[in-house]
Length: 495
Ligand SMILES: Nc1ncnc2c1ncn2[C@@H]1O[C@H](COP(=O)(O)OP(=O)(O)O)[C@@H](O)[C@H]1O
Ligand SMILES: O=P(O)(O)OC[C@H]1O[C@](O)(COP(=O)(O)O)[C@@H](O)[C@@H]1O
Ligand SMILES: [Mg+2]
Image (tube, rainbow, N blue to C red; front, side):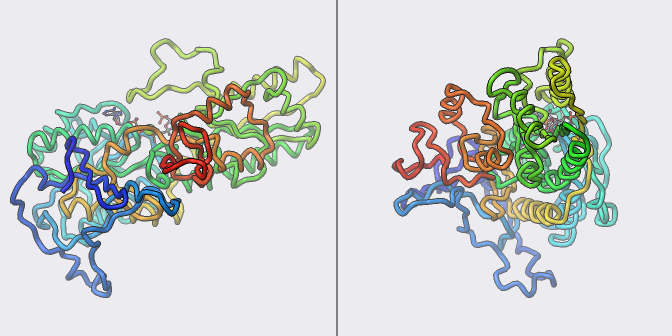
């Protein structure tokens, strides 16, 4: 086996630079656990399946763009049903909790967790924890059955409620222990999964036979390693409606400007992909790419130029963009939400007012500006068809893993394959748009906007330590240190 540096990290090395970043298992700290044949063997739906189970050595590479001499690199354990399970059906007492902001698909994940436990593994004790982490110790729980969840995937939000703040590791694990819960499915984003890792560590410290499983969720897509977060496609699709409305308003009047604010506290993926999908956007502003308003090369100059050329303009701005330009008008102490996330000022309203003031002052050009903020309308809708299927696979993978005795992991899509990813890889940093990558260059060429970066900022951007994101091409990301394209670097593994 591999060496264990701490309970979350199990590294197994192999030939040619193969590295498996494995996930913990209950038998890492509980010896002689009984096992049972996987009941899927007798499940009629699976009777046609040739290869019932995932091979014990199946792993998925984190990097798929490689060179002839590349080391095989980091791999993750492949998700799916195993021959043996570590829980008898009657023994399973599962709970599901949803934390943080809403995202399309939350109810689909809940539905599929319940239905997988019931219909694949015969486990019928499933609780919904009411209202996020604090629900473990301060609220009642909701009994979840296939009947209760039957059509919830057609509704936005989460039927078991969510919250921010309120994570108290020992109180939560006390509740898990007192209720006799032995499988915990935690659906949430970067903050939630940090909380899930703390719960896993405490469960292991107490030596409890409890599988702790994370399912990554955030509309911002700010979670690293995975290809994308569920609900992201739905959000990009729904954002088209707002962008189209802004475009119709803008092109229907002389010097019309449509401004649309989209979600993205620290990461601008929704704004970037919605812009690329729409092609009616003239300027996309995201938290990762600083911009300025006044003077040569500034936004005001670009607005004037675009209006002169086209007579109208659409601006998409992620809510986390430009926060550094807004004066600190937040009430003191209101800078953080109950989870410790940065509280944002309404940059959409701010930039709309600044543009109107600027052109009114110069009264050389009368413009008509309409501001649209669809953020909460977008995250409160149910998931689209593609995300529904994605949520189903995520949930089923999570259940297969817990039943197989894995714990302390996040179920996640890596290069199109469901995998089990150690918590520490998910919580180590935030996924951000790499503005020196080809996808952002595609955006700039589709909007024709200036980069708003001076030579100093561009040099900074290239030096950024950010490894490539799951949504990028990756072919031309710069090596974090040398700044050279991959084909000039030996063994680049930053892309
Ligand atoms: N570093 C952390 N350690 C433990 N719990 C955390 C941490 N950060 C956030 N949480 C908890 O996770 C939950 C959701 O976090 P939040 O950041 O609001 O949403 P999300 O996880 O969806 O990004 C909250 O209940 C919060 O208290
Ligand atoms: O839910 P709140 O407190 O209004 O916060 C809104 C923020 O939550 C988000 O939707 C992301 O929330 P999560 O990280 O919890 O998924 C951001 O896009 C947005 O900035
Ligand atoms: Mg978050």
